[in-house]
Image (cartoon, one colour):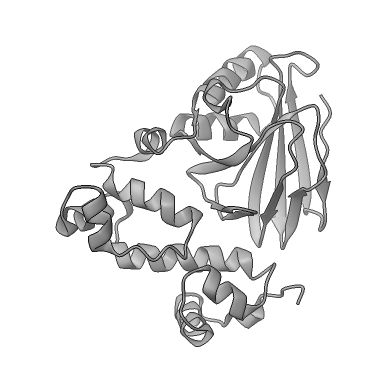
Length: 260
């Protein structure tokens, strides 16, 4: 297989692990160790489907964000943009075969099951036997889903209410839906949703939302000025955003360089 389409700032390291290359059922796993902004995509890849996933940060895309429970899928011959920011690892999986659940998806966030995550990470190292790697590839492809129900099925330990909300807010941190509105949409009570957040994430809904917004902001600050980022992640004013950011991380967002 060939891989292409990486532009912009360079990663510190790019490791390559290929299994069954040149065949329809092969898989290529590229592991990037990043320190700062790294851009992927923009130039079209006509030969391979691609899945981007990070275990320890946020990936910014044209339509929003993906975090560790989701990856970003790009079908072959579809232009896309993905940006990693800060010190993080990014896995880029290249496939010739289309995963069954993603046949109607051109680009976008997709759920990655815990098993698929484990197997994906296992392929990013030396010494994996070919037969074992190709079995892992099948399980990884089966562990991708595009629907909310698929995401909840992959990741929810409780009722699924918290994970349903989490999927929306990680993709759009500026979403202003209040907790009582979420409870109404999900046909349950505010107390039940709060309990589910504590069960799933070990924190309240409001705390989880704050952390999610600020993690997304860290990625965006590599791309845009502070005032713009404040509104993109749901703060009414830059000053409120700066105060929340400094309280969370111990330094102001101005320390993170943007191109502006």
